[in-house]
Image (cartoon, rainbow, N blue to C red; front, side):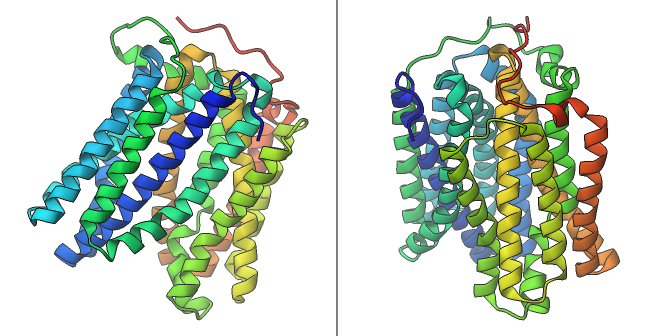
Amino acid sequence: MQVSAAGNGAFTRFWIAEIATVLAYQMMVVAIGWQIYDLTGSALDLGLIGLAHFGAQILCSLPAGHVADRYDRRRVALVCQVVQCSAAIVLALGSRAGWLTSSVAYAVVFAIGTATTFQSPALRAMLPGLVETRWLSRAVAWSNTTKKIAVIVGPALGGAFYLAGPSIVYATSAASFLVAGAVIVGIRRRPPAGPHEPPTLASMLAGFAFIRSHPVILGAISLDLFATLVGGVTALLPIYARDILATGPEGLGLLRAAPAAGAVLASAYLARFPLNDHVGRIMFVCVAIFGAATVVFGTSQLLALSLAALMVLGAADMVSVVIRSTLVQLDTPDAMRGRVSAVNSLFTGTSNQLGQFWAGLMATLMGTVPAVVFGGCSTLVVVALWMRLFPGLDRRRRLAQAEPSPEAP
């Protein structure tokens, strides 16, 4: 993909760093989960791994946005790579020497979660400065394509390397983080987005205030938040695989991979053929397709139909993600991008985590199939309601239609 003549080299480095980081993280997550279960045999301990990462995200999201807006984003991302590389080395040494315990693993996971929380808004805010505005949607789509592929490939690599021992997985992850850090160093330096002001509460909450005062951004972010919260099905896939579709672990693997496969196809298409008109309406239509596909999946008793529904679901979600990400970046001044991206990441992470809990709760109360169908129908209701609450988003025609707002102090 030709991003732009001037920014192509910088974007290529950014892209390589993202791939290396996602691969390293996915390999490490697989190894940590498997090793902790080997050590403890406890499903609760597996849940605590996710809780440690989620806790770091909740605690650090707002400070991370402030840091991304007040310091050199390249340096912030580099420090995060160093922290993750060091964490992987600790895990490798602990596994090799036999002193790694679950408590040490939780502490390392918390450190990794902290690093990824600071890294995410810095990288997101960095991207618009690497490409021309007219190429940004393609860059976002291309970035999402490769990250989805890495999410699919990374766990497979981690599982394969684990056969040689967990220390091999962690050492490979450390090397991948090291590559990402080295590539980030080569990205042309961007000056700090604003003065080095103290991290006051008002500064850290400025992302919320900015989003609240911009209906298009608020509508786009909250639409994804509520659609994901009520319409998620990932947590219930094991039940569908075993009890409804009568398939085994291999079927579950296919079900988990199907949304990612649909997302890869959609983002690859958008990278080549970017959206040029009626982007707000397209976003609403795609979220509605997400809800309808959820209903189809919920009622299906055929594996092929279920896989097709999940691929459509994943593709529709990816189109919505690309539109939302690009709108948020283009409508946010550079001095605010870190904090707005941090709030966006916080909402996304929270909706994914709570969405899984909500799906499990509703399945317990209503039954699995009624819960999924209810979730898909609820998503359609959210779309209809949001079209009335945010008419500006519905009428938004072009991604770069409006000039960015004046930079915040």
